[in-house]
Image (cartoon, rainbow, N blue to C red; front, side, top):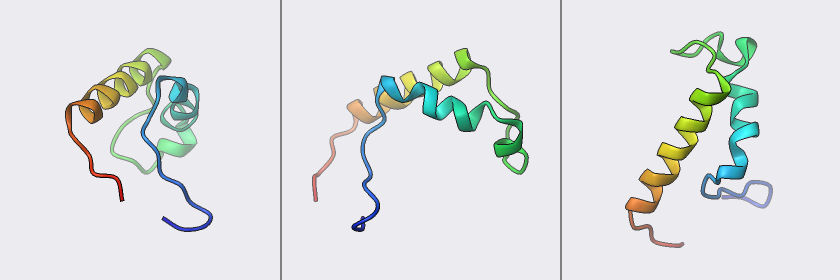
Length: 60
């Protein structure tokens, strides 16, 4: 963390922002996966939220 960076949990409202990256051919050009569809991104976000809520976290 820094004065300019704040890290927070992924929320279902973030799916458009995630899709902007995961759905972009340019953004995924050098990643290990092809661009995702909006439905695939929604599933990724849902799984990430479920996984995060299943793991207890300590606030620092």
